[in-house]
Image (cartoon, rainbow, N blue to C red; front, side):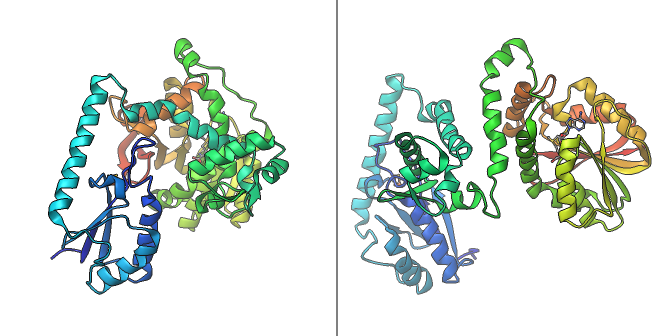
Length: 449
Ligand SMILES: C[S@@+](CC[C@H](N)C(=O)[O-])C[C@H]1O[C@@H](n2cnc3c(N)ncnc32)[C@H](O)[C@@H]1O
Ligand code: FES
């Protein structure tokens, strides 16, 4: 028996601008409406939606095929969605006015379009034209820059209640014509909607990019905006092999950096605490940043007392979070230099999250030796960081992040699991094991023998 009654393949193929495709004809919005309608009619467990590549009717999309019957719907508009869900998926009656009934004509059209497509691929190849995907990767900075500039100028906040370009420019202190060009580009990226002359945030921008929303990631994304400038120096860093780090972030830069770390920790801290916190009584969080991990660990384990070790400006932010969590009694802070200081003793758990990538190999060996000295017999160290494959060509997020360290630090990099294991054993740890957690970073736990 099938796990669901209907399996719907909906085309969301995007083609180069000017070439007909379902995406250009509104398939993404229609798919969202379809998913919403299926849930609202209580059919989430009956209907499986799978987005797919071109179905071969590109000039009259959005297109979809419904199995098990194999009913093809073409030119589906937002206003057709409710009828399809109600009539076909709920009552088993396909919507005949939208369904393609002439199967022979359908096959002819699909095959003709496929032949045209293959001919155009061969013609481009023969003419030596670069593949679109490669061209898009090379130009990818344009989209990124548009969003970062809007964040830097706080334009998403300026239009949160709807604004013309002139009103947004007045709020942001920018020039009106240029602001309109930027807002138009944001509309092309579907982060903003333009109604007449008035710009509104799309739901995703209203929630995550405007200041003041409970889930706003604007401050964290301003850290990414700062990274942009560092990445501009990548060519020179590769020539020279290193960089001069920007150690003076200033109050605003520190706030953005720690907000970015806190934003990452939102997804990671609770599962990591679930996997590692049990059984610990005294924890040290080396370079603990916003305190998000110490807080999650203390919440997961009522016996635990934790200490967040970091620089003074960062600890001021951590103390704010610890206070907000009501955990001042169990989480303390300590100012220190993780590159050189001894950590003291008596800890049975040391967390090193997103620290090792800032350091060179020798510095990491030295750090792990000091952590080893700070742990009681049988105590554990947990390292959370990007863990590369042995050949260092992936996962992609880790390989790219290694360059982030090249442009931002003197000797930092992403390292492989094998490298971490070797350093841990060398420092006197045994029983190195990897903890399976979802997400781009990996976790290794080792025990002091
Ligand atoms: C990438 S953040 C990681 C923060 C936190 N562990 C997390 O995973 O969210 C690096 C942290 O190390 C701290 N740090 C950097 N250099 C340090 C040093 N020399 N001594 C103490 N803390 C340092 C930074 O202030 C920052 O909080
Ligand atoms: S792009 Fe959707 S059918 Fe071709």
